Length: 99
Image (cartoon, rainbow, N blue to C red):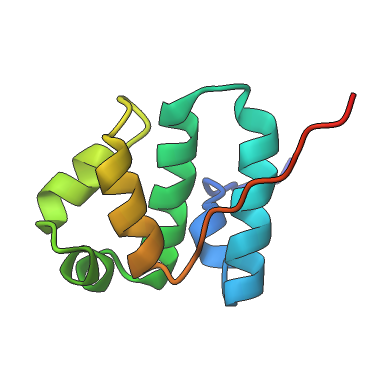
C-alpha cells in the first residue's frame, strides 16, 4: 500500500491579491467572536503572504515584534493593529448590526 504524503496547509500561500486578503480578513472578523488574538493571527497570515519584512518596515515595527504581535498567542495593541492594517493597505469599516 502506497503511503499518502501530506503537507501542512498554509493560507498565506493562497492569499495572492488584495481582494483575496480583504475577503479572508472579513471572514475572520465574522468568525472571531470577539477574539482579538484570532484577528491578529489572520493579519499575520496576510503579512506573511505580503512579506513580513516589508510589512514590518511599512508599519514601523521590527520584524521580530511583528511576528510576536501577530502570532495569535496574544492580543496586540489596537495601535499595532492599525499600523499593520495600514501597512497591508487594508482598512477597517463599521456597519450597523441589524437583528
